[in-house]
Length: 400
Image (cartoon, rainbow, N blue to C red; front, side):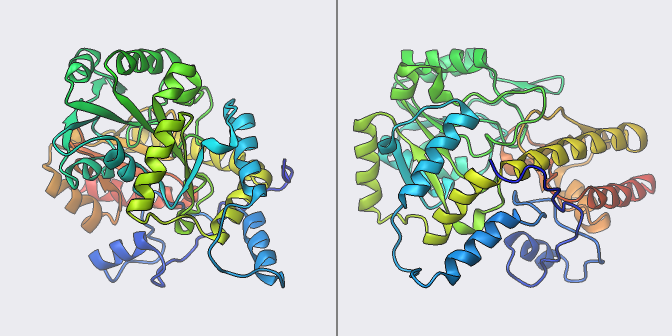
């Protein structure tokens, strides 16, 4: 599977101030005169180069005389790659026809919320959580039904009593579930998933499982795809994922929903036709195929880097920045930092971090209730940049 003996470059700075990066544009709008060596640690794409195999493969595709950049259907080789990847990496045997290709996980679950619930109904979610979850309900006249996670001394757990109560309400028809959980970094255990699934099956709540971070699991943890718990769970769920987080391909808008139940699948594709939902591009299909067949060695090295960065932040904070407490990370490349001991409101905290320290992280309040006093840090970057960012923060806090 790919060239596992290659050592990839995760040290070089990639300067993205040229206007092609959403994340860089956001911080440059905030501060035009950023000192050299400052990088954003906000939006979840990587400050790392793409796997060279993908870049070379796309170049070959573009140089091939038979390539035409017209409307793209999924090539057989792409579908084969997705099937094989899910089987080998995630122990999930799927049928070809379960795959519905989508142009991004966010639009895909937005469409699902609309296809499988009615205006006025409730969409259950667990804050602090990835903020487009809220929009998926609010923008389309559904209610956000929040079942906030319980912070059990730094490890988040599901509030089972409240969850059971919310699932029991017949107007709450859908659960938008984040697995692994962004921003708190939990990788749900089999026991938790089963308990959640049993409640959803008992009360006929459809599970929409956003598993976009499912490849980035830190040592000592194991991700279980919700639908692999068994036939009953698979038939009442839709799984959303993509190569976009894993291989830094978000700009190619290539993702997929896996829908084992034929009725649900037909309803979903029917809805997508009605709203003229976009499908992935010819370059996206190719990039995913190459990622899933040739870049697993690269992925393993990225996971090592993220684990190293996580430990680096933990050590730095315990030794030099005791005011900041990193919560334990199990998956994703996003670290959840507890800044509550600074005793600042969120506006002041953001000003301190962004204006004074040039420590560009995502405020926890972005993720709803339970995010107050926290920030989310993107660890998918060279370690040296995390080091200088934390040193700037240390200086500023020392002078408080």
